[in-house]
Amino acid sequence: MSIKYTEDHEWAKLENGEVTVGITDFAQEQLGEIVFVELPEVGQQITVGEEAAVVESVKAAGEVKCPVGGTVTAINEILADSPEKVNDDPMDTGWFYKLTINEGENLDSLLDEGEYKKFVESQE
Amino acid sequence: MNDQKSLKQTALLDFHKSANARIVPFAGYEMPVNYEMGIIKEHLHTREKAGLFDVSHMGQISVRGNNAAQLLESLIPVDIQSLGVGRQKYGMFLNEQGGILDDLMIINHGDEIILVVNAGCKEEDFDYLHGRLADRLSVEKMEDKALLALQGPLASSVAQSLTNTDLSNMKFMDVREISFNGIPCLVSRSGYTGEDGFEISVSNDQSVELAETLIDKPEVELIGLGARDSLRLEAGLCLYGHDINEDTTPIEANLNWAISPSRRTNGERVGNFPGADIILSQMPKNVSRLLVGLLPQGRAPMREGVEIVDNDHNVIGQITSGGFSPSLGCPISMGYVDIEYAKKGNELHGIVRNKHLPITVSNSVFVPHRYYR
Image (cartoon, rainbow over all chains, first blue to last red; front, side, top):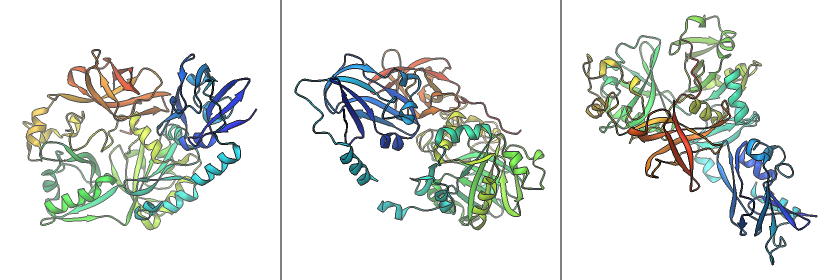
């Protein structure tokens, strides 16, 4: 199991044919204290690059793009009442949604951890 | 980061940086948006204890000369002539259409009148004043002064611990010369948070020493512009350039209280300020739209620019300020709605990312003021 990253600071983790999507620690740090998360609906079809979720901090709103196309199988219900989970634990319990990948799509073109780290350093 | 070079600095910038502030460009200055605590905790700390803000980017202008109060009344719809020495009032500069050029504080400091104006407007304000009054009055920028705000329920006990001046008889909008730990300051009991507190004009040279003296007190934390904005929004206080601007009149902005009775129809010195005909004809509420408080019913914040629609999906207003209220734990907004929709309790919708989400017209003061009157 490996975690892949996008240049928009999302992460995607493939496990048993299902991908979990969230935002990175760098992203939550940049956004500041998160007060609202809008998630897609279970069953919703999402295409790669689509703005499938929205995250709002005290300062601003940001769109979360989908790193890979697929069908939403679960959303993180906790975030409705505890959006601050995304600040506290962005890579684990602060996940956004899970999806099954469309046939023919994969995470291969996304950044691995080392590439993402380098990308973040270039942004700072 | 090339634009950083053209940005101005307050005397406290290095002090903010050493406190690990997140610095952002604001109104042409490098300003702290938050410190290590973060916006929400800074906000709550100010409501519970005391917060220290650097607001030195704001303009302080000294006006001196014979009949200064009378001459300023030709520009500001406020009774300045009977403003006592050591008192402060809120007012605004207006254009000929009654639109607001800037909102400001007016201080009677004995032989001078001090105007405290918004950072983003201060050059225009100075040119405006200078152009109209410099032939009869001295109009000077007080560029050697910093401005700090100490706000919150413990602000008065903190301030009292640093001076022999009895602060218990200094009421909201009173102004005194006070020495804090030997540092001479001009202090008004006022602020932009809805809390009791003080706005402190101090020389640039001694501003860091004063700030350090204040944050040495365990009750006091540094507060950035982020929490300053959420605090003022909870208190229902307008932000220039957002809730009020050149296209909004004070009456539309629900600022009737700021137009002094003596300057209104049937007052002793009725009118004779820019836009007087329009403003007086709009009083008390003869306007087509009104600034109101708006309470989103869900958890999604509704920010500046969100359109407000009625049940038939007609656009009947727009949000001018909005965000998350740390004190209430929910989103709050203010904005203009057509007058027929301005009644408290009216249920409307705001359009957020193409969704129509319920929002209710409410009191614009979301968290009650706790001024020391």
